[in-house]
Length: 344
Image (cartoon, rainbow, N blue to C red):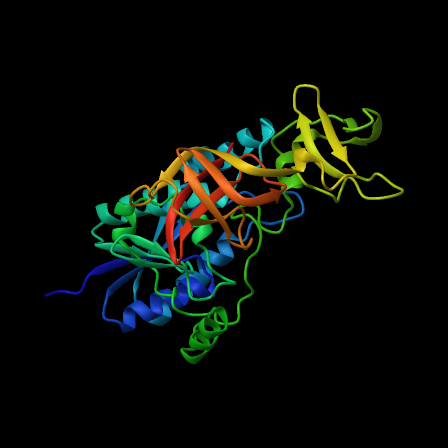
């Protein structure tokens, strides 16, 4: 019987490089694929795509595997970048990495790979999968299941995550043992396509903003001026440039009036929520029983909180601060990722 054909998404980083190496060692018929999603330079930052592509190619040559480039730039702009910009315009705080996984890596890439002759795909995500069930990675600090909750059961059945049982230091060590070209390459940070450019600088390329009032929600007085309501999110403290006294926190905004509302009261009810309405609920396998005790993560690396799911409503054990609409709430049952939804 011939070995299963696996297409590995190779980004030019150490994680996907080791993923490819491990699968070669495990006897799979491996092809490396660089997904060309975003190539645009931004003011003050050159997009590193060409360097990343070159690094991915070098590793493929090192491993003696075939290598391809899949160009998804048009679909990526439409499904990920435009989605993010539209969400910010409505005053919400989206997570483009989640949309990238849903629409590009585990839909476009998977479909293109299967059509090209692959049996499965693999990525360097820190997550575990068993028979279409998504589970948290061994390394809690690196676990990326928060970003993967919208991937379908069918896609997960055709996906391998070889790094799910490893820690980041172990990955570095194993990559160095194999003399992989990317073993000591620095990790890329930030949003998938924004890179080291701040979200403010990125949005400024696509959205026209104008100054507006920052208003104290209690006194109804203007206490400052902002350079665009789109740039502010619930619970934000920094970047308000309001001097003197206790810090202010963002508690809301009105996009039509271009106003940002703030408070100095950390106990202000608009900062805290115990019940969260979820839109676009996605469950990977089946819906948990009504009233079942679950855990939920409200943002990447945030602690797991006990909660119950009732219909589309999430009831938290205790109120949580600064839950921003547009972000995701991801549901867990112990190690198993159940799914989640977009916070309304």
